[in-house]
Amino acid sequence: MSLLPAVDGESLQRMWNRLHRLPGGSWIFSLLLGIAAPYTGSIGARVIELRAGFARVRLRDRRKVRNHLRSVHAVALVNLAEAASGLAMMCGLPRNMRGILVGFSIDYMKKARGTLVAECTAPAPEPGVRREYELEATVRDEAGDIVATARPRWLIGPRTPHV
Image 1 (cartoon, rainbow, N blue to C red):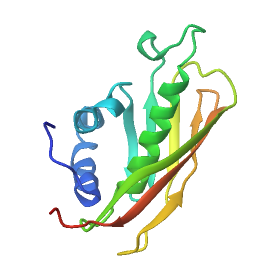
Image 2 (cartoon, helix red, strand yellow):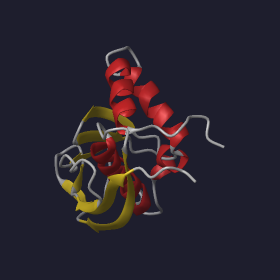
Image 3 (cartoon, rainbow, N blue to C red):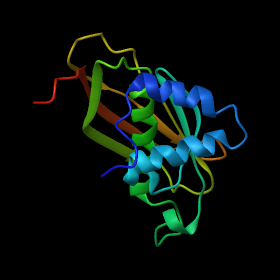
Image 4 (tube, rainbow, N blue to C red):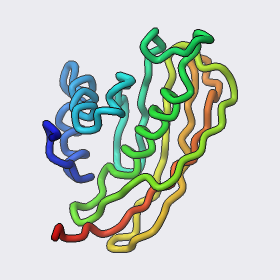
């Protein structure tokens, strides 16, 4: 049982708008995101910018997310890119719309070390229309080099009443 109810895109945007201006607000928002989506929260990433159609999420390099090669684990990069794409896609969605990840591919360009930032831009979904959107999320290191490029596919459509 989740500690938080399912959050729609409008509520997500309102919560970000309220919290991110406060001292520690982006940390609190990121913590709440991790409670609502525990696997997403497992890497301890921090949302640093969020608006309808755009998200920027940061991940500090530390032992918890490393592999045996002393670089950030490939699956931590997947998690980071998926979080950025999901936030960009879902943020601002009207209450009567929802989305789910239906596909994902990722290319790794170089070993990921140091603080990483994932960014994703998403189009505004067509109201009331069920369709897939393929996005691109990039993960960059502190030098600005792309370490991974992900292509998540989100299915967005109207909410159906629970029966």
